[in-house]
Length: 433
Image (cartoon, rainbow, N blue to C red; front, side, top):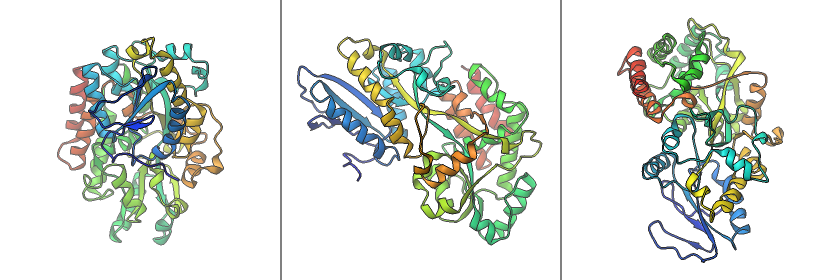
């Protein structure tokens, strides 16, 4: 049964022991309690809320005598704006979930984040060795220190509706030429070949990276971005030109903006209006059982001039975790309470619970594959033995560069700019770093 939700999406939900306090009001706290703030975008409407909140509530109740815990939840875009504002003011939450890579750069530069090795040295319950190899890479800054604790890993997949392919007597495409052929058949019958749009760079940004990894040196170029590598490469232009050709051949929805974003793109697929879609497990909560049943995970067709077999690889990376406010952690009055809160966020209990939402854990925990959603079972089976490759989102050195890539992809998908203009716009931001 779902827990009662306090406020609607996009608003701050403040959940406190014994009371609910509206934002901006004065809260009366017991003098002997330590007050801490935990913030996240796992609020109402997010697939992880129903799995996270019971664990949080249990933690809150167990520590009610000594801790006054405020939980703040926001919608994702509101959350990014809030954290950016708090970074500028130097007033971050005590512990908060967030992205690494370029998204954390401003906080690292301002000295606001704790090197998480300090937390591991203090915790009696959680250690760095409890996590999968490479899980921390997303949170390692240019100074070599680690500023986040990974929670969620993920994998990118191309879903194909077997029933639609069978209806028209089509095989899954393995090459770009075959993709164009099945695309013609689908278009003639009112079926969108691939439900992929671009709104705020999603899911187009991840598709761009998926295709990029097929080209010689592509994986290495994506990795090199984190240490000053170039974006405006020959491979980037090739991929952008290919995307424009895919648009010309009507492989995507006609209105890529309206049908962009994870939800809108997936909706076309789950409504059986599209034969394929590219997505990630964080959307699996929205895939009905009958669509999970008829969906198969297939390799992305090999793009023109590409040399890496897409059937041998899968995008896989740490995508989310939590950070610790350095000043708050070093406050003797708050220190022990924050350690306890971090222990909860990094606990096996929470990790195992979040797996049920479609999350691939970064922590080493036992996962009962048979208890997962069918589409997750298929994902785990497909990913086995594949070479993991990264995406631009995790290696871009700044949030500004990510934002420019996203907005420029939106322009590319409506053919407002050329492939060269797209790559140069992103490179111009990197050149300012």
